[in-house]
Length: 155
Picture 1 (cartoon, rainbow, N blue to C red):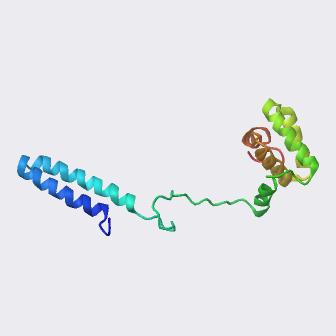
Picture 2: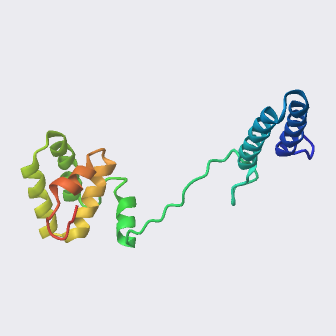
Picture 3: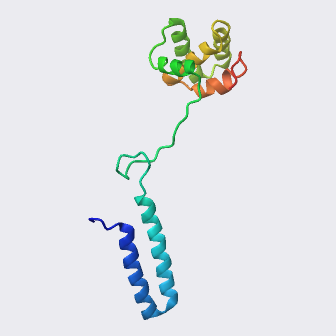
């Protein structure tokens, strides 16, 4: 609209309608129209607000900032877990855990968790759990239900 903002256009038209309603029907309809125009102006104003950091377009979705507080080793383990693990024993454990989680074999799941903790500790358990997640297993249940209380693991 070559320099005319939507909000300005709504204000001018709304004011004209309010004045016409005042002279034609009285102050109550004019006040109602004025309130409706004010509300529309606020909505238009919000929709025209630019998002800081957005590249010129207001159609870009606003995204919340995500802060990852995990330690560096856990972030690296998450990246590593997106492909088969370097340790074949850990990869086999992760694949077995996916099947066991589907079958809900809590006894064997806890047994594997204790073995991983005994031979590699918390970091090894995290690495295998992340691999289970990337294989499509229910890593949330593994963390919160089955491995809670094993070693340093707190679900």
